Image 1 (cartoon, rainbow, N blue to C red):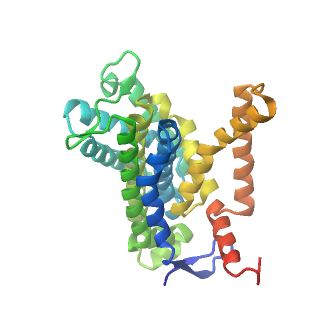
Image 2 (cartoon, one colour):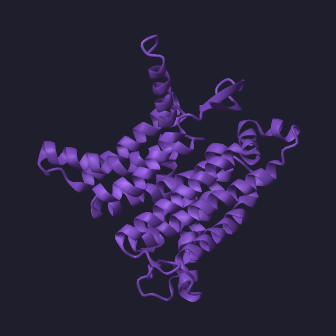
Image 3 (cartoon, rainbow, N blue to C red):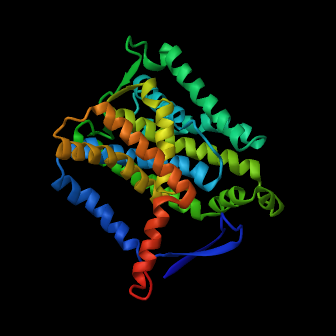
Length: 353
């Protein structure tokens, strides 16, 4: 059983029909069952909280940026700033209104969506490089705002926000297993929403605007409405990811946790994983999360720990840069397309490989 989607080829601008296999959905249910049942049973606390939780949160942030850049075609370098909005707004709801964490998390995402709506208004008049500069200005403005106004961090001397006791309708989520299940549930639900959203009429409008906005306008699509809506929904996802990053992973965070480097990290995720691909966000986040561990293991094995940690970080940045250049030139759709091509070749092996 297949589902078909009509889109435009990015290289030739010719319409192509993409067939997505629905028969493979049972693998998703198996992965989800393994994440809920098997992984907590076989994984230790370090792997759950230091590896899996940040991987899931970065995947969610990647989905947020991919909705805006990969599907709607709007460039942005303000992901870290919108994550900060979600984190500080959620903290305010927890501290001042004493809301349960899921409610505060949702409202924090709504505040981030409103801020994204405001900063998305210029997309109605400008695009491309100029829109990217506007989003960069939003990043710097939000960093300045949360640093210079003490109310946002409750007048703390360290200018950081700390996670209070996390609970969901009487259930304590402050322990490591509770945080893992919280993050997994939020990411699973929002991923399901994103998959259905990009397959809906709204998602088709985004892709039409991305591929050729003039033709989309002729077809009756409200271009400005679609762009601003993409900014709002993208910011909602990034805001939720920022709150989870603060309260379910770090425990405490400041503005420096959501700086420009965080925005570039999210951008690297969708470029390496694949623009316009929900699964590519998870692939790119896995690569970003596991590459430092792999480099550390290689350094320990080959050089017995004699390699400086700073050198490993520089090597990691060099690898990211080389991969981004390679993907932009050879495979703009990222690792998701490479994996899809390999699966297609294996499905007809040995006739073609």
